[in-house]
Image (cartoon, rainbow, N blue to C red; front, side, top):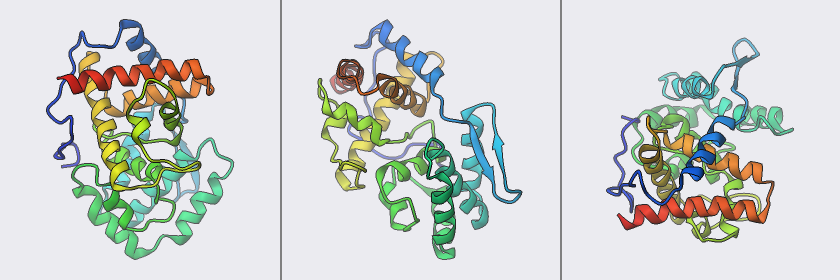
Amino acid sequence: MIDSVRSLSVYANKTVRKDGSLKKEQITRITNAITSFDFPSIVYDFKHEKELVFQTIQEVEAHIRNSLTSNDPVQVKDGLSNIVYWGESRSGYRSFRVGDFRRRVTAHQLDNATGLFPTLEGTSLREIKKIGLPRFSNMTFVSKIRMFLDPSNYVVLDLKLMKLGNTTPQNIFSRMNRQETHMPLTTHNESCYEEWCTICRCAGSQYWDPPKRAVDVERGIYQLVDESHGSGNGLGQIAQIVNDIETRIKRR
């Protein structure tokens, strides 16, 4: 089942104490950032050619997940198209990129995706990439597929988070290989992605009651980076939060 995590990671049996290294004010910052996460809650109805607006991001997740796990390749195509539509919602290239995906994706690729998505175990990013789906070749968009399939356990690895790898203290992002415009999907980077998912999942279950999902913690960190506007001091504070969580998990 998609909602269970069968993969092993370096942190698989680690836990974080509720009185661990994060201070109350750090937890409050992440909580507020999760609430402030402002990606539009929208998808597109390709059959009726109109935008659908939801009240919450969780409704967007459910809509796309239902499409991705359908046994109908047409619905899977719409689900993948909506990942591009949602992911490019702040981009001036959204219409082109959605149209490009829909024109270039093949029936064979959609058949492979339809068979694979409901059966994924672990991160499986390279398995997804092997399908050869247009616009889903680098870490960011392949991880979006994994997140929408199981947001409780998997997250998006956005290029914006890589800013944390360029500051101190060192953290999970410092160890990732990246290029200026994208993150290549390599064995090493997928291993780092697995660690990042585990960090978010452990933090969500141990620092919040009721627990936050892995994707909620990731979105909180993403929102803090977005709000920092590249400020060195601001990024350093966020890097410290990530480092504190990671260090505590390693010590257990």
